[in-house]
Length: 297
Image 1: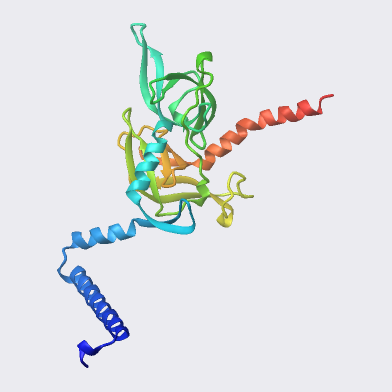
Image 2 (image 1 turned 90 degrees about the vertical axis):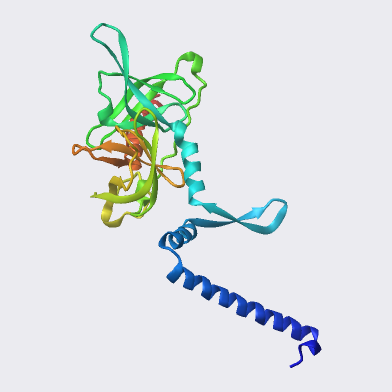
């Protein structure tokens, strides 16, 4: 066949054939290099990039029906989750009088802000009924705390930031509570807590303690297997110096647990649905009071 005498259609077909053969040859070469000659760290890096890359198709502004693909790296998701939630994970201080009579304060652990008006969740062992406590927000403000509830069995407590009249319109940065019964082993999780200076750890959920109940818990909408719910969470990495009350977040940025020191010295996490239950229990008396008020003539 004389290449010089080929017509336009034949040239196009020949070009496509050459391109196809070249791409196949290149693919075979790359695979062989990764399998045989490339060092392990090189192939692991490539695999990690592929595994941790997410493609999202999003609409193009001003062009209905047209979408463009955006590559979202796990690193970007993690950094955004941390940036969005850092202000909601606050330090808690205990106030006391020293032997010389001077007023002192000491860092005791952390709490997680759950609402704009200053509802705080923490580990129940962090506070005592006769103690005096405060929190500090990232903008430098100090707020007194009042204990609303302590559930020693589940290890969680709810506190309320007391707003002075001058700060009545202040809105706290807060975390959104997730349904912890949707959690799965191997799921990525971000822990923010540690000592007085915040530390962060990124790991995976390595253990889910399950508790059976009859009937299923009302705080969850998840399909509960065998009438059980998540009652304890462990992860593969922990923030250094965690004292209790630190936050465990999903990569979508929702709160899934609160740090819970164990008697063994280990740190595990109370699931977020425990917090939902505590909030529901707090609201129950006020709901009953409103019902009674409506019944009154």
